[in-house]
Amino acid sequence: QVQLVESGGGLVQAGGSLRLSCARSGRASRTYGMGWFRQAPGKEREFVAAIGWPGTITRYTASVKDRFTISRDNAKNTMYLQMNNLTPEDTAVYFCAAAQDIYVHTRPTDFASWGQGTQVTVSS
Image 1 (tube, rainbow, N blue to C red):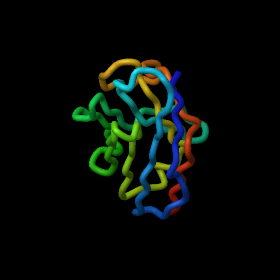
Image 2: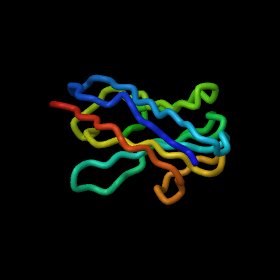
Image 3: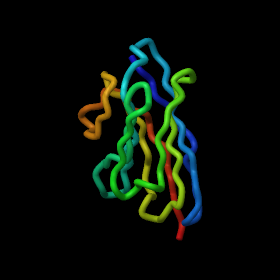
Image 4: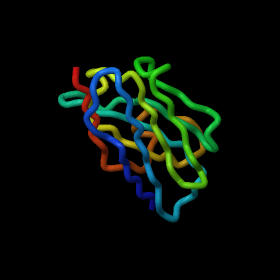
């Protein structure tokens, strides 16, 4: 069992920054890939960024590349998403997820565990 808890969401003006955190707990293996997804009202959940184990390989969706940075602190069992130059189009509930192997994944079906989500709202 893996439990994931996101934090760091909030309201920010366009051009601002936020850093999301995802804390992991549980007894399952600690060597796993992780990812961030987001879901805006009326839209499907979409891939944002992913990171493999131990953290040297990352992948981003095109709309956030060069603005967002995914990272992980394996000693703290925590993953981060640094979001810079935010736009209203980034408004969504952001979810973190954990896979069951060390690789980078981008499809929701590749992830076995999910957090409850944290709201990010960007005002214009």
